[in-house]
Length: 107
Image (cartoon, rainbow, N blue to C red; front, top):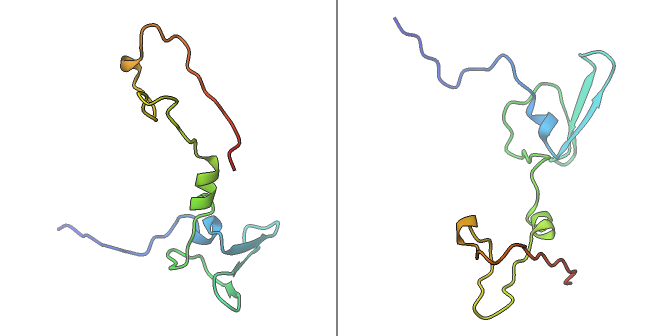
């Protein structure tokens, strides 16, 4: 007989709040000394248990569109015959031994 359980309760794993932008986490010296305050709601609420799913979860490591635009490279063609973008290594001219990279601060 096969037993199959779908969407069962996990018994381990990191709490979702540890990777959330809205979480205010205070940890003590003991493993059990943890206080989590959710700042995604108003008023802020104390979360008395480990969270597995949350509809307001935003990952701390995720960058906003504005942050990605700030670090993005802008590739402009220098002439009418040149295209902007990266070129595969096989398509490089044999004479071209160096790659020119121009960094400037455009507002």
